[in-house]
Image: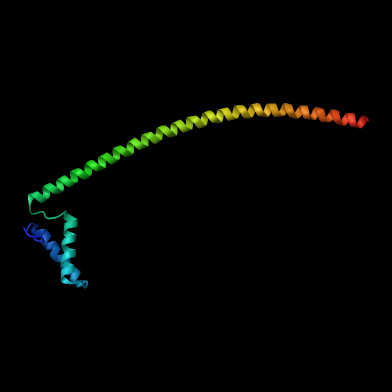
Length: 134
């Protein structure tokens, strides 16, 4: 079959191409451009010629490949979601422990600071009283 032969297309596809070609000509396109656009549109809609069984088989193979690829992609997405979920739970657990230790150290430091402040006040009072006496 020579290249560009349209005999393998069904009658319906040929009618569709003729209709599209006419509408393209009305829009001001040349005959060659209108024909090219018409057959490209039919091919895109139907996936090629439907007159032969071989064309249908190739379309089925392509469909199988695309579904397999889609399944692989979804599995990969799920795996990455699981990994990120594990990481996030580890991070939140680490954040909780750091918050607890930070609170404890803050309590200790405030208690120590309070003790230092009272000691400073006492020394300042004693210095003031001693300087006032002299």
